[in-house]
Length: 236
Ligand code: PEP
Image 1 (cartoon, rainbow, N blue to C red):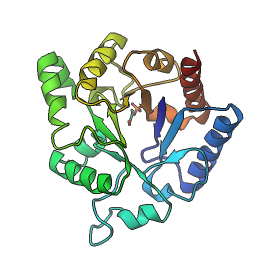
Image 2 (image 1 turned 90 degrees about the horizontal axis):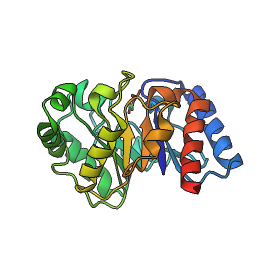
Image 3 (image 1 turned 60 degrees about the vertical axis):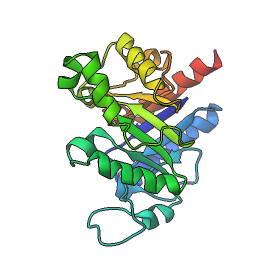
């Protein structure tokens, strides 16, 4: 399974390094065979020679250039970063990233062989509009994306569940995941208010290949417990 932490705009570089070291120690001392990904804040990227895969929360589709405030490929190469999060709802909705820009990012980093965690998910109004309209909305987020890309991971994250403490029912998560598996066979993570208290149930669902965790991942010991749950489920 894939257990991923999105640290968003939290933790300095020093704090991030301590966090990654704690996860690495846990993974090594418990012989964890799950894939653990961490997405630190951009200025907290560093050389982390550990078993934890570190990715960037964002980067512009460019090697370098005049794109104020953005990271380019050279900034990722400096730390051997080969993993990127694309399409997170905060990028789509707070920063107004369009599907067109996301496709450009996707293609640019795909051509470089990056592991891409591509996020999709509906706002509350679309969920309340019924399954057909909700699935149409999510389907539009697949437009222009190579769903057969070998290094693709998809994360289903309902916008209304992110950072709110609200989650769909387990049945609803399984239902949407089953429908999304028809669109792509890529590993499919669930994200949106996953906590140490619900992670095991979510990870046990059919067609859930892992989780993407925001707020709750900021507590290393909680995140390690989630990694342990995934390991236990896979061992059984
Ligand atoms: C996220 O930001 O990807 C996320 C899932 O956040 P949270 O776990 O806080 O809902």
